[in-house]
Length: 361
Image 1 (cartoon, one colour):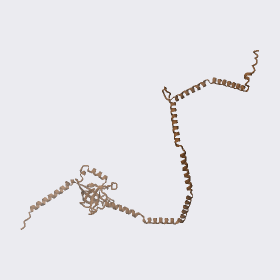
Image 2 (image 1 turned 90 degrees about the vertical axis):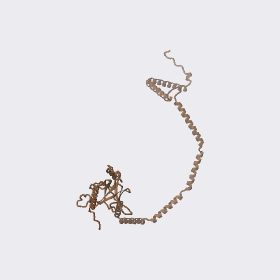
Image 3 (image 1 turned 135 degrees about the vertical axis):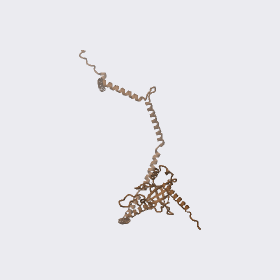
Image 4 (image 1 turned 60 degrees about the vertical axis):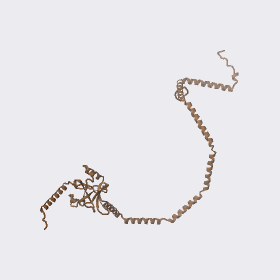
């Protein structure tokens, strides 16, 4: 016979299991264990194929956490009205990932929000990458160009800390290729081919219009004339004239008595030096007289003497004029006397005595 089940033990087990379940719900609901984890949420406006719950989160190749939730943003937040149309934020994918606090202890301080904002301003972004071998996706956080990848502004208040995202490398490459192909499609290759053919036709026509035979003939005649001109140049005469000029220069240099010229130059320099010494002695002050050179003083005295003579002449001008007139009369009398003596020299010895005056009678 089998043993009867103990309903008492079963009841106690059910009660204890229920109590433990309620305690776990209360503990997890109160966030007691969640305080050791940091939660972030980010948004992607692209396909996140390969990313799943539990996918790793890396920061510059170092694993720091894992993905916790993947859903659409429209299922969590109320989308703004779009006048009957689908909101632009409806297809955005919301990804929540957790990071253990010990992995990033610098974000556990009170200023974690300000520090995170500085990191975001420097270009911290989250993007989806995938393993090439397995195809498994993961989140990678790194610093990118903030101007190229600006922060997406959302019209709701995120539940957790908002981390901006950036397109994946594959998406960026695909967009670049699409832009290149779009530009290539815009190019009118047929028009380019037609233009190239027209250019070739115009070039062929220009070459055909050119009279190559005439150009060749003119070039040949020009070369012949040039050759004739070169041959007509009297190179021998030019060479002989150059030779004679060099010989004349050699003879001139040989005729120049360079030693004699050097001696004369030395004597000239010596004479200039003696003249300089004489001039220095002339300008020097006499011995026993203090002061500068005597030539300026002599010039000053001469100027003063000339000024005195000018004043004397200006004062005694009438008398000097009378004296000059008397000298002029005496000079005229002497000139008459010498002329008469030259004409009749005997009168000096044989002249008649003067007549007896009437008064003497």
